[in-house]
Picture 1 (cartoon, rainbow, N blue to C red):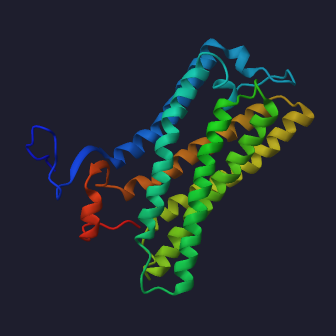
Picture 2 (cartoon, helix red, strand yellow):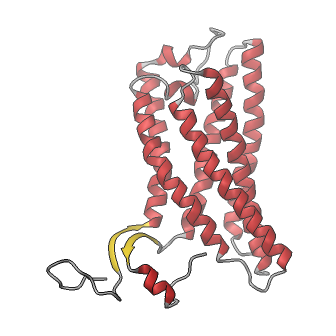
Picture 3 (cartoon, rainbow, N blue to C red):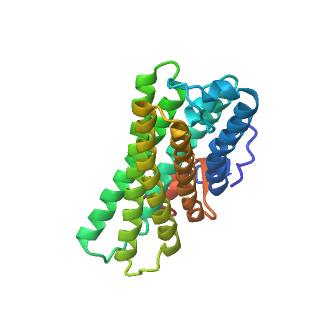
Length: 272
């Protein structure tokens, strides 16, 4: 929409003026790529320049794969990681809220009331687990294991808990939406990928916990490397899981505009 040609900058009362517009799909892609690319950079540079430091553990045993906390806890990688997370978390909250609203719009109006309520409950669980997951990520990032190991460890466990619950809840919501639409093929490909990634995450989490216990209690060689390997699998599966929603937004835009409330009263758009 164009502003009225008033030299004082006054706009027509019936006009919508868009101050900013950003392709939402591009925002989702960039938001997902930022932490992934940063992790790759931190991993490569830490292995090359700080190999001994990132492999150091309390057991002082041989390891070949450093943990994510190790490669993002040394300097200068910690500053790059913290910057990337600072850029990453803001859009994640917006994406979480938008995705919940988007899926609400697909609920079958003729579906059984219990099915509709179940969908809404799963969407709420998925949304709040996503919010808590992002918040826990911020906590794990800015409270390093070298500064406060106890709190860092508990935040990491909370992050894992919220991440898995978000995966499960969003998957259940999609499955119930397909039931409400009486279309088993709806979101079929996405549901398949989400199931695979959820299973990978659960299995990797179990193995990661076992390897961590092996490292802490028995101090066996390469136990920490096996733990770290599982950690990277979980991080990759988590990023890929969030990438599955990108196909939902082929033409949506994040907009800052003036006058939208007027068009809402005219039923030009609806907020779910």
